[in-house]
Image 1 (cartoon, rainbow, N blue to C red):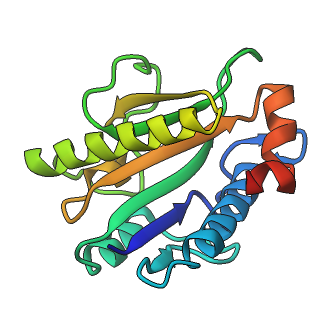
Image 2 (cartoon, helix red, strand yellow; image 1 turned 180 degrees about the vertical axis):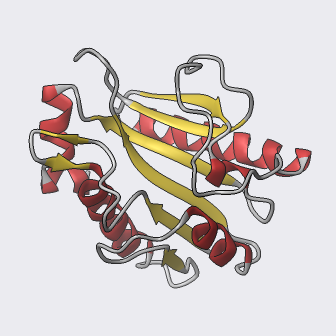
Length: 184
């Protein structure tokens, strides 16, 4: 099964920025390291939606992934919320979002996309729970959650979006930008 890693943002889209740390850079660093580690298994091809600091539209990320049948799609991001105490990873699969009603509901440059097929949503939820269990087993804080993010509406394969940690938490931001922590 091919794995599509989607490091969020890129190019002029910086993502979250706190004290010089840019989400787009950290997400790309994690994706490159993960690709290198996963590529050691010859039976597990890994593709990045971007492998440098370029902007890839949400539509391009989706169209490219649809062409790779049998794949799983993993979008990598970093969280930023008010306050400095939030910590840990959140692994999203498609579904109604309860906790973030304040979030802007649409991206202005993307056309609306329907929900993925029900079976696909179920596969995505199972994938999110498996990632959550694996992160916890390795000693990380992680929670599964639901959202209607655009990349989670992928009709072609199970899709998850992982917020790797909180950039607004100074301790966690320090870890997220540390290459040794990224390796872990």
